[in-house]
Length: 238
Image (cartoon, rainbow, N blue to C red):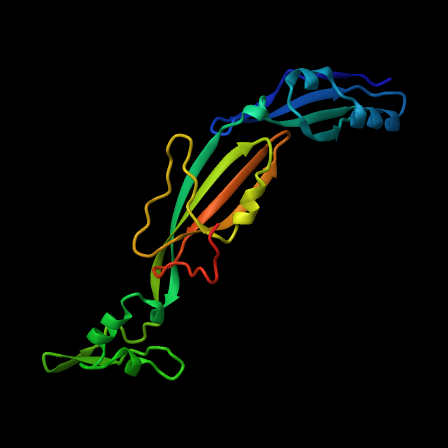
């Protein structure tokens, strides 16, 4: 009959911010009467150490040894007190995106400066609404290369603010906020998303949740809108 014993070599890791723990518990299973009997035992035994540890096991990994026994490792993870989980962490990513030059908030000023004197925004637009800056521009009576000739896009700074937290129950209201204009929540220690400038808004653009044994690890991400703000006719307020 197969038997198992705990191998005194355990790997463990703790996410200090969220309180989520990962543990690998290794066991060895001795050969039984038949290979199938040994395999069934390796697949089904539940050691007392798992109960004592107090974390759910999420995966059982088997590796057959030359003597026809098995090395079995239990992947355990979770939170020792999921009902008291309060951990959270924050991150901020800055990036830029290419926006059409026609969407620039100071397009009027650009036309006045980089088109012939007296050109209006309406005159500068082509039939399709696009703007094509001239090759040269007059400066003090001379024709000089126009620095905006050929420019079709410009870089718009953007920010993504992400909050990750641990919770025993998935917050249903988060799913309803996806794609909405709003304000990222303030952390328990006062962590706040950066204050925005101009007419910009925050839009919730991403939601990710992973079940970690006995607790949810949830991430919500907020994106800064363009310089003209988010249009409420397209994005509703949460």
